[in-house]
Image (cartoon, rainbow, N blue to C red; front, side):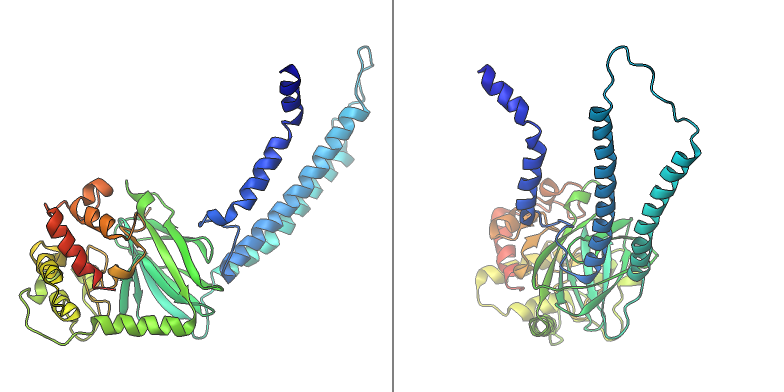
Length: 380
Ligand code: CUA
């Protein structure tokens, strides 16, 4: 027993090393790691980080090495005379001022270079995407294609993305660790960020500035796709929402007056196909459950905050655009996996899932929620 505990004590210095190895091995399980860059901007930031770590490690090894050497080599014994005092030794003081200054300069050069590079506006045929932070979700607009989506950003691999960012209500921070790092977004002020995705896949992003009680549930996904696949997605998004004009039970105005920020939500030129139209046209389903869900979507007031059109969508709506909600991997801004069960629960009890969110508990029954889910699943 005694032997065991002594052995453990002897080997305890290994613990941090083992922890480090385990963490490194599990790095792939941390989707928001900054240590696995998959884009050019993230790679620049990673470079600055490792440059700093390299110098810090060198300083650590040299200083600790000298310390250990002194401890063992010059260990004092009782009765030894007082050692020589070096206080006020100009040579020593100059050395330990100049060396750190040089090291800081070595770190400052790549850091400042990276800061300038990061603040450049990408030239050429970068794809501009507008990002709007809301409490607590992300709106993504593609002015080039006149498309709007929410919480799931699709980007083509190998194509520079230029983000023009703002906020609808309070200060948020757009953080996309594997591609682009972090940048604050403000109401009434534009900030920018750019990146080029290097590898196809799904990536995690997150709001990184405290913005209210559900700040932690303000995540987003980035779907990086090969260019051909991305073009297909753009075509698909236009197709699912380009509806013929039809008469509708909901006057177009109601979509607008029921949402705040009327000044920003007016779509650019041609009148947008409205929610009710798209609901009717995009389902066209004979499934009675879907038809019931469509009716409920209008009756329960969902239509007042959510648009079901991605193309030429009304801007500044209170709720996320739902044009392709049926195909997204998460709902409620990364809070829940997009399963039928979760979506039903979210529709019925949004205030339980995400307390304080603008979506109220509308008194939707289980059956009604099922119909709404069936209807929303057709929007994909
Ligand atoms: Cu938005 Cu934190």
